[in-house]
Length: 331
Ligand code: NAD
Ligand code: DAU
Image 1 (tube, rainbow, N blue to C red):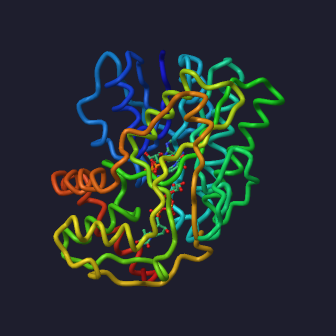
Image 2: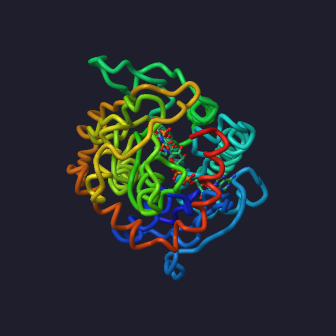
Image 3: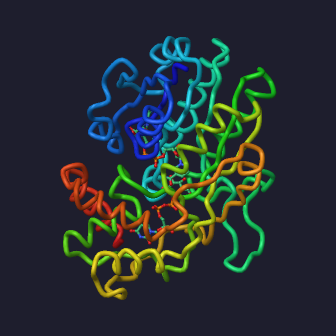
């Protein structure tokens, strides 16, 4: 297959590109605007017969149209992805997540191109800490932040294009990813790189918020399974039973990096901070036979810490500006 991967210079998109080139014979074109979150260094060495990179905006219809026409399938990762940024300036989230997705699905409709839309568990809002149920494909949408509201909007556009125009689309909603190539604004890489810099990790509020962690490579294998074997028009939730609260995660980071487990600070909370996400991935596991490979979170986290230690050239250019933005918010 000829795949058009949007946002392939970002964290999860880059992991997917490496996974696809390493595990299949598919060809990949990445379309990426290279915003502050995109990094060409994540795709270093891939240029060749099976891979090419195009710099551009997914909301640019004239650029998007021939790329979608030339692809057998579009895998749509490109987005503004960070909740804290969406609280400061929501507009780019509307432009990329809503108008960008609209531009891509219009092109896919015109050319009859298969479309896979990457989304998030945040569209479902949050759960109480003691709630027995987890998110399933039939949980009602209830997004909390400007980021998750625009992701919910983009999911609903894709669903409407399937029903009204027969778009050959699938959707996946995944939980929190960790692994290599993640921007230092996000929780785990921020804390790892803080410790490398001799700075104490910073945890929002009381640190009791729960996220359901999955390694980015397991996300990639799930997306590939849906792309190759998923039923058109269906949504699949992706998760690997990785619930942990933020204190537990930061304490494990500190322990794995040889620091005292209580050497972190509680700082100002995020506005509207979702309490808990939890995914029930039964449909993906039973229908498509998918299984995660990174069952051991401490081992996956240890490997991620090693990657940040060994790839300082990759993250160092973003670190100071990212921390300066957090300092303005007291975070
Ligand atoms: P990221 O911020 O690391 O990367 C986003 C990429 O999209 C960057 O390379 C950026 O340059 C590109 N981009 C942004 N606007 C663009 C535009 N207008 N045109 C073309 N390219 C543009 O994001 P990520 O964490 O890798 O997330 C990727 C996708 O996965 C997003 O759709 C996100 O909602 C979804 N998701 C993320 C997680 C997570 O834990 N990070 C979990 C579930 C779903
Ligand atoms: O659930 C999937 C979502 O996961 C994706 O849709 C988003 O794109 C992705 O960014 C992520 O959203 P979160 O808001 O959960 O991720 P973040 O890394 O920003 O924060 C994880 C948790 O850690 C959250 O409870 C906020 C907290 N946090 C974050 C930072 C940056 C801290 O306590 N301290 C921090 O410094």
